[in-house]
Length: 154
Image (cartoon, rainbow, N blue to C red):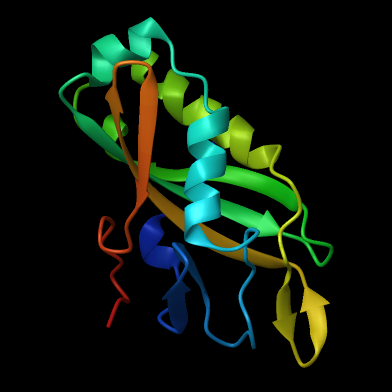
């Protein structure tokens, strides 16, 4: 599993909207289709859940902080799993399968509307915190801006 910078490295000048945490200097943040509902629908429709995932997460939820770069054309360029509750909650190695599956689905997303700064589209690194729990053959992914504690959060 790739590791990024610690979550406390996210700068204090950031904003949160549509499930994303992004630098506040941008005029408009990147946006997936029509927003958060479309993002959830896309993830829930495309993440493959296996029986072993259900066995591991059946009565548990997990939280993962993904960092992704959305380029000036709206393509997801890179996805890093920055922080995960599964890394510290004593789950076995198999629990990371679902995180990796979500990462792959994010990497293959259709184009986003790119971030804008000074009337130009720009490449931007954003954070996407997700909380998920499993129920039978479905995955419910709930973005939450209060899951991870950032040292610089106001």
